[in-house]
Image (tube, rainbow, N blue to C red):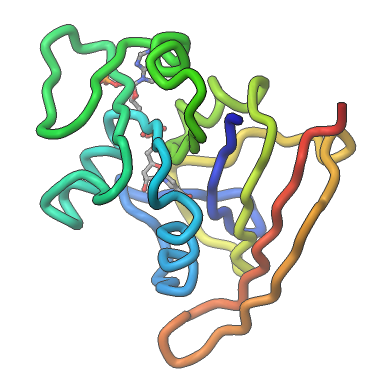
Length: 164
Ligand SMILES: NC(=O)c1ccc[n+]([C@@H]2O[C@H](COP(=O)([O-])OP(=O)(O)OC[C@H]3O[C@@H](n4cnc5c(N)ncnc54)[C@H](OP(=O)(O)O)[C@@H]3O)[C@@H](O)[C@H]2O)c1
């Protein structure tokens, strides 16, 4: 199964200066719960953003990095040079595409399930969620996450499945 997991503001911003434009530990916890034990596929810039934050790849997940650089290397990661190669090398696995914009764009047409955290704010940013035609998707679950002392915005976590 190929899934996408993404957090986007109401104006579809997903990132700014190669980082997330909000502080939402509730969403990071959910991301960890959903993806742990599975395979995560990401663009090279998202990998570098994660590596800058954690000092290592995402733990307890097979990390697959998509890059055009022939010699790119990262410890404990699988490096591929196209989304097709990523899917070839992860056949039979539960695969989550975790961004960024470039890789979401490539993966959206093939994605079966979409985990979308809608962050209830409008922010400036330099990367956006690709256009999703929601008439092609069934909403299968929804949770409201009110803002609190640790989470700066209200958010709604939704899971969609592609209509067949
Ligand atoms: N809100 C969220 O849920 C979320 C999730 C993830 C990321 N983000 C944000 O998104 C931003 C990063 O997104 P981005 O679009 O700039 O970068 P990205 O998708 O993470 O990485 C882009 C890189 O992926 C490689 N790539 C892209 N298309 C390729 C292809 N067809 N074949 C081979 N390699 C390919 C290239 O690497 P090379 O240049 O090495 O060739 C390209 O520069 C950051 O701000 C991050 O914080 C947000």
